[in-house]
Image (cartoon, rainbow, N blue to C red; front, side, top):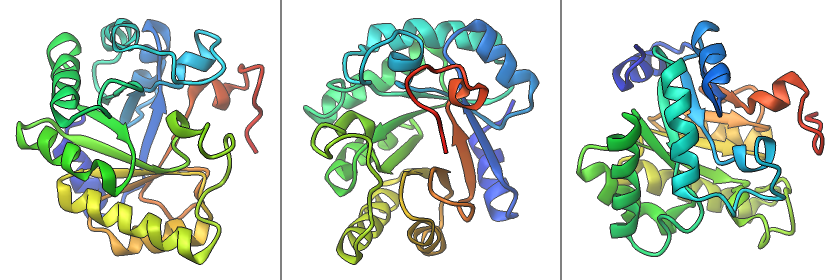
Length: 228
C-alpha cells in the first residue's frame, strides 16, 4: 500500500503524484487497479454522486458511508477523506473529532480540509495527534458562495501573494501537501517552487508535484460541468 513515506519519497525524487476521487466500491476498485497513488473520497461526491448543487449539504455521516465502500474496493492507494463543510471550521476541537472519525471508522491514511492561513492552527492540532493533513487552497468549493461561484483564484498579484502566504502557513503548521485548485499556472508553479511539500494541482497547470481529477469529470459522466 502507498503510505505517506511513499508520497514523500516520490516528491523528493521528482516523480509525478497521481490522485483520483472515488465515491463507492466500484470506483474505489477502479482507482486501485489503475495504480493511482492517492485516492480521495472527496466532498465532490455531493454533486457528482448525490446530485446536490454544491458540496456544502454533505455531512460527515454521508461521506464516511461512501468512504467505507471505497475502502472495501481500494487496498493499495493512499486513502484521503475530505472533512465536510461545518465539521471542522467551528473549532480545532471539532476538526480533531471529525478527523479521528475518519481514522477510526474508515482506516483512512489522511484527511483533507479547505482554507488558508486561518486554518493553520486547526491543521496544527490535527497533525499533533498523528493524523496527516492535506491542505486545499485556491478555489475552495465549500466557500464558493463567497467567491461568486466556481471561479479561478489568484489572478491579481495581491491574490497570488495571499495564496503563497496561505501555502507557507499550512506547510509550517504540518500539512504534508497542498491541493492548488483553479489558480493560474504561473502562480501554482511559483508556490510549488517555494514549498518543501508536494502540491497537487487541479486546474492549476502542469508544474505541480501531482495532479488530482474527479473521476466523473475524467470519464465525462457528470451532467452539469464539462472540464476544459
